[in-house]
Image (cartoon, rainbow, N blue to C red):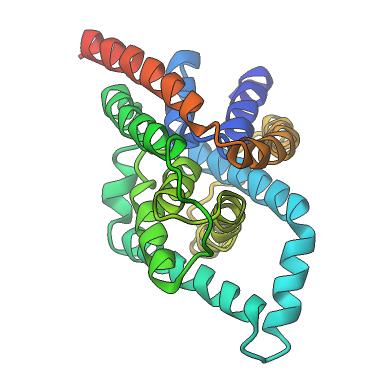
Length: 265
């Protein structure tokens, strides 16, 4: 992979991980446009590095929240911080279940399937459109909500379904406060990303020897810096109830991807 391509894909990952337009879908489209011919091990290594970069940017943006949650959790009291932490753990279960039992099936969908990405971007667009028009959004995330949002995150493993879009939209449609919905959505993915990276390293899925370190480095910093900007921007967007604007973008890109995929078939 060339350094320029790595930077472009890093920027795509950094922006789309937080903006509700599907980072996995855009990475697949980006690789198809750039003609990425990386062997699977190298491609996986690059994807993991980019996800680690955006997870790190999430930790930086929410560092105060994370410290408060950790303090509450290790105080060994059933306080608000402890309950919030347990809800995050609860929300992770569906994605962990799907990831462990259907890992090969999920990975088979990440092979430049532009047509699938296009259709699923339309699904993301519909979710965002509905969430953008939701009115009654004032309550905190309940235990039942945490499970439902977790199911939305599990579905968002599919390329073309935005993780942040699916989880925030689901939370807002359940009537949760928009700011709390965004906070919950961004924090719930960090343990999953770090866990997936640890798993890949431990079982040796990552071919580090064959990976060119320079493109990885540039891709990492591109994703990290744009992730910081996009995460902060997204929080502001959710507060202002502007999610429906992204639905139009998803509809447009989805239609283009479907047409391109149909012509290439």
